[in-house]
Image (cartoon, rainbow, N blue to C red; front, side):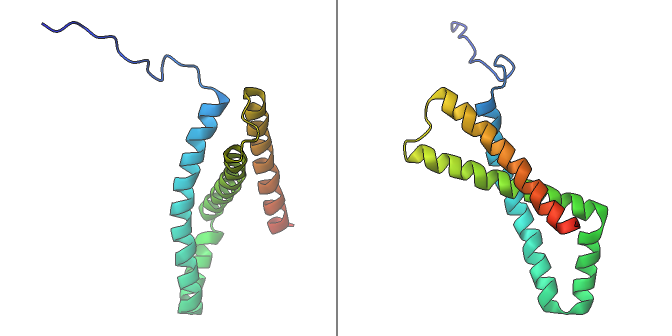
Length: 125
C-alpha cells in the first residue's frame, strides 16, 4: 500500500490577498472584454446593415440590462488597461517591492473607478 502523501494547500487554506484577487480579476476582465467585443462587432454590423437593424440593436443596448452590460464592459476595459500598464511597469523593473505592488494595486482600483465614473457621467450629463 502506498504511503499517504500530504495534499497541496487549497484555496480554502489561504486568505485572499489583494495581489491574488487583482490577478484573477485581470484574467476575468480579459474574458469579459473578449465577449463584449463580440457585442461591439454586432453593433457595428447593425450600423452597416441599415436603420431597421440598427434600431433593433439600439433598443437592446438602450434597455436597462443592456446598459448594465455596457457598464460592466467599461469597468472591465478600464481595469484591464490600468492593470496592463501596471504589468508593463513591472516588466520594466519598476514597483516590484511588496509595498509598491500593493500601492499600485490600489491605484489601479481607484483609476478604474474614477475613469468609469467619468465615462458614465459624460454619457448621462
